[in-house]
Image (tube, rainbow, N blue to C red; front, top):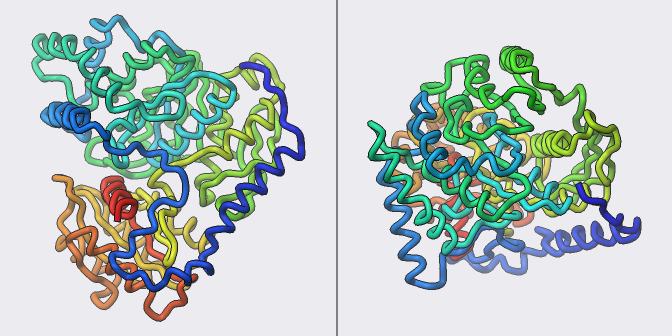
Length: 504
């Protein structure tokens, strides 16, 4: 951990004033000026610098990237899990064990993994460490999954990473009964790319579960478990305790475990696992947590209690109590990584922590992509995620009229998602994304009608038509400043909506 020269008190407030000023420039009341635009009113585009990569400008590079994606797509999909790490372990062996070239923070849980991973990465970057971050799924571009120093690797580098390991992938494929899966190959690419960079630390998000996840060939010095709820029950278990059993597999001998608040049965399982492997545990609400939280323009103002003390004056440009909790988990994880609370008691430099959190982005998670009316994207795809999103939208925006656009994947608890959103949606437009795993709009609408009633449900199978319909509904009987649209139900739906809204 490098020593930082603290910014002056005045400088930190100047930075915060700048953030507030930038957000104030986007006051919804000013949006009435542009209210005349009604041709697929998705022209506004993103409100700030876009952290998601564009399609490559070079047609040859774009073509090569598509070819790599097609080759990967020809393998087992990432939602198919086999209780074995034999194949990925074999790949690591022939690659020379690249995952052992750097320390790692390993992140599992049901909700909040990606946002927490991005916060951890921002903190490590702020303390001048070179980082690699591996997350899934992607919002728009597959290259988002592998990041160096907070930026997705270029399309060219992604292609090179694939070509670099392809001969070794072929060797493992030939030796194994089942070929390496889509997710296993991507994991191999990430681990090899991080070793090649090289990085000082890796932030690794589990794909699904923990014990048998392809990422679990890495030994995280810090294991993070974000809130566990019911999801992927056909693969991970029917109770949160059973799911915790699978996710607890990332907790390795002697690691430090950072636990977000958990259901009782999940907490019991995770604590038992920690005892079995002699891991040290820090729990949200006990050893660390959110001390104070106030809604602020463009996000929220926090005081966090970490393992080494309190950190005040933290501006987080993300919405919702769940994001504040994610921030507390991320801070504790980075403190543990640096030995705070174990090797020494002193806190991290507060100015550096403030700077890191103020820089955080999380595409597709409570992300405002346009105004007049305000359109928010959130990748909530299970009831627990939908519940915290509903609470965050209500708190942060206070819409007088909110219309939902929902497209879900097959196998998800769509009814539970609808029940969480029912109190805040005036109406809901049902749609579907282009994925082969998308639930048909008609099937999804049948469930929506049971929850909302037929008069509050509209069906528009094409996503662009659904967004246009939702904007029209939001503006009816509502002042421009008080209307809103929330696009949700799936990361894929949100990613496709994001591209429409940006390019419209």
